[in-house]
Each structure stands twice: as C-alpha cells, then as structure tokens.
Amino acid sequence: MRRFLMFVLLFAGLTIPAACGGDDKPFAFPTVSSAEVGVDPTVVSSTAPPKETQFQVLTEGTGHPIGPEDVLVAHAKGQVWSDGGVALPSFVNTFSGKHMLFQLISMTVPGWGKVLPGIKVGSRVLIVNPPADGFGDAGQPGIGVTKDDSLIWVIDVVDSTPVDSSASGKPAEAAKNAGALPTVTEGKSPTITMPKTAAPKALVVQPLLNGTGVEVKAGEMILAQYTGAIWKSGTVFDTTWAPQRGPYGFRVAETDQQTGEPGVIKGWVQGLTGVRVGSRILLIVPPKLGYGKQGKPPIEGTDTMVFVIDVLGVYPDPTKG
Image (cartoon, rainbow, N blue to C red; front, side, top):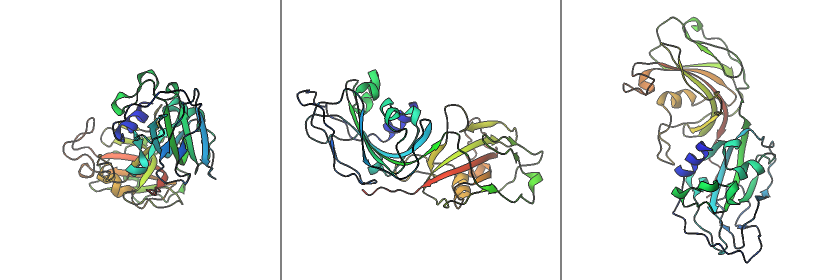
C-alpha cells in the first residue's frame, strides 16, 4: 500500500477538523451531489458510520469488470466521516488536481480491495469504510486521518488492466540498421541485449510492435510497461515487470503542470509523443536527453539509456470541475 499512501500524501488537501463521533443516528449512506462521472462531488454524511465496508454504484459503467489484481486507473475523492451533516475538506481529490490515480488494487486500502473487483470501467462508486478497512491502527496523521476515523470515497473508474499486460500491436518492419541496435525478445518482460557497437548520439525511436489505438500527445497521462538498461553494460536499472510493480502511470511531460512535480526525461517526452496505444517501442536516449552530465546513480553522466516501452493506455483529463 506504500505507493498508494505516497499518492494520497502528494495530493492531500486541507487540514481536516476532527470528525464528530456521535452514534445516535443509524448508518445511512452519505449524500453525493452528483452521480455524473467526471464531476467533482460534494459529499455529506450525517449519521453513525458503518461497522463494515459498504458501497453503492452511483453510475454503472459499460466497460470490462475490474480484476482483483488489476492496475486501477481512477479519479478519487476521499474524506473523513462526520455525523455533523457538513462536507468536510477532502484529504485527497484528483478531480480538483486534474491528476489520476494509477495503482494496483491489492496495494490500495483494504476497503477498495473488497469492493472494486467486478465493478465495471466507467462506473462511479461510493465506498464507506471503518478504520480497519482504511488506514488501519496507524491512521495517517499527516493528512488529518486518525486511527479511529471512518472514510468516505467517491471513485470514478477510468480503466483497469492486468498487472502483466503487454503491447498488443502487430510486428513492425525491422530497422535498416538493425545490427547496430539492441535486440529485444518478444512477449512479456522483454530482455534487451546490447550490440558490440558504439551508442548512437541522437535519440532513436524504433517501433517493435505497431498499435492501432489513439496517439499519445505531450502533456497527457499514459499507462505503460517498461524496462530500462544501460548501453555500455547492459545492466537493467529499472523495470515495471519486477514483482510488486506493474504498469506505470505518468504524464508525458518534463514537469507535471498540474502538480509541479518532476515529470519524465526529455527523451521520453520526445520519443513517446505520437506513439499509438498498443505499441512497443525501443527507445535509445543519449545523455543530453536523459539525466544530463550529472547522471542519476547508477546511471552516469555519459551513459546512453535503452528502454523498451509498451504503451497500454492514454488518458486525457475527463474531469468536469
């Protein structure tokens, strides 16, 4: 659940006042101002919280059902339960942040894992969970959630994909200079083998599989699998195919304009723009389009990086304020 907590902390909102704890009114679901997917909802609770996790499908989508080990792509708003009949500030709200959550279902809070498998893509779901199915005995004091707080979530399911998803496109035409390029095995978790030649000085974008989905645009959020290796040694320094990893969601930008957080390297922005969903590309990134002269250990300032990237999905911002 660590990556999920980091996400929540990154998009934490205002400091949350203590929730009222009276139990005089039997549990009833909170009111949600809109069932429309993409709309930032106002959520008000006014009764005692539930003893066990409860949920309502406010709008049922028409997409595929979420699998229990899928990577979830979603918008989410979370706030502490109150019986006071007022909308407390949210501790996470991707609707207002124009961002998205990309997370393994199994690494979210327990209440999500109990409810979301089987929910269809395109749905809006209301989930309320007791502390044990939220952040547990530790709570999350940094965002104002105590160990005794029940939680309310409104989740818009944008997409989901199995953790081992890979590119689905058709084989691309071989490069004319294929002998001077790394070779890549087919299928899931591809292996990269470096040639015994000097690394190219310029960015190389070589299609391996051609997808037929929408094109990636700079600034959009995408979901991808990737493996990164160093040209001179062949050493793999990062891969989403490792255990407890899975497809990686990010904005195709050097700086995320919505959060101000650092984005991806310039070589990724240039190399991924225009690539279609379903594609696998071989991306060779010279130092000046990677981490520059300073490098980023174990990558030295003179290292050329080689990536194999599978583009699984593209997600223009669908929120409506």
